Image 1 (cartoon, one colour):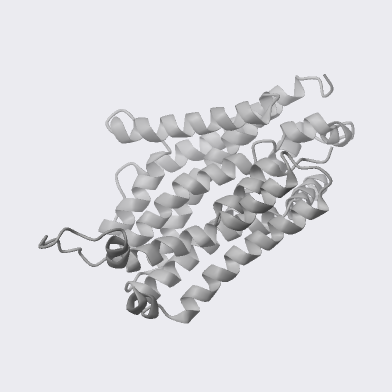
Image 2: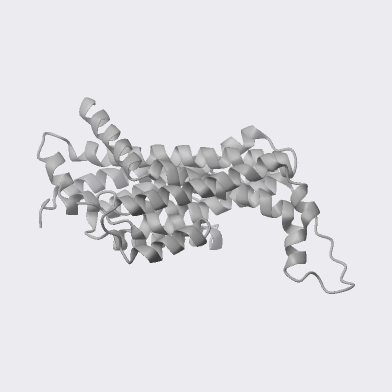
Length: 259
Length: 68
């Protein structure tokens, strides 16, 4: 456990040296701020873009607070995921190529703790960023649009957080098994995209999919209740994380550290 | 347009600007401190300063060269 804490702290330190602790939270907060601002300014934006044709009667409905927050979470799910995957694509392979992994792993360190420390370190950063982003989105929505429950905001963000945890486990897995950062990022993004699309298109077949966590968040915010099979999705998500991390460690152990 | 902008409390605009400035400054500091970048340095300066949000982020993801 002490070595695990040591490696975990090393991860946090390395992310601080790479300025990740500054720029990733900044990106999430800006994403969180952007949606309430654009919703608030939408009539003016339409005007500035040329406006509606003369005489057209189109009522732009006033933005609903919970929908604005939902759109923000959607942005986190698209742009946020892109940023997370691209910024951590070389999380294992980069250390392997630079020789740091070799230096760490000649010591009596378990491969599993090496991998899980990496995942936990990245998760810490993602958790802080996502919560900061959601809180600023909540604050701006409250300020510019209307009342919004803070508790619902937090629940919705926690559901997204579990989905992000699955995605990060995928990135760690591919980064540990593939040599390059590019293929790892591409495969993770492709799988996440495929899972999200299939879950959206074949809801009857994909009831188990952890991508449904985002749908639960949407339903919670707009209708105030979760969809069916909530616990199944949580269970599958957690199982996927465990399986991915354990098999990443097992596959990583079987590869020579130096080519 | 002016009225709409004035309807936003100044407290809401300041953090937005400050965060963008922080991103730009941090990216520039890193750019000047690193010995090598992927692609010419002046190009990254332009990208970081003129592309709001996207510029600094793409520098951090693409432009930084990992020191071995």
